[in-house]
Image (cartoon, rainbow, N blue to C red):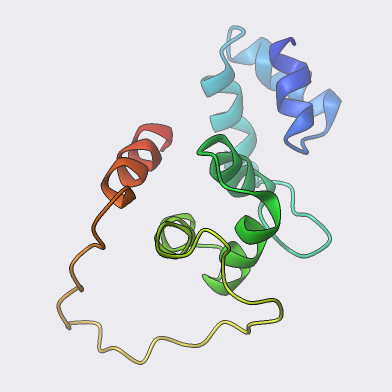
Length: 126
């Protein structure tokens, strides 16, 4: 499809997508950057549709991706980590918990397996 159609499929308003694509010289990336600077659309469940689209483009399923984004408070990297450890995502209705780890605590080691590849894909998208 066209650049505008792909952006509209992600949940953006068609008129805004047309303007962003025109101003971004028909570049998907430039248009998306412009639109996300204005704020990503949110689904009825409060999930950022751009973050969801990124997870879907990485091959994750929609339901688990939505739950992972909700559980991570909208943090895309946190959602990727959750899904890389459990592709089925967090259980239905799991409420995000505030982090109990001190801010200066060392980060845990990344899980083995495909998570390195997923982190590389995430970095490439951002």
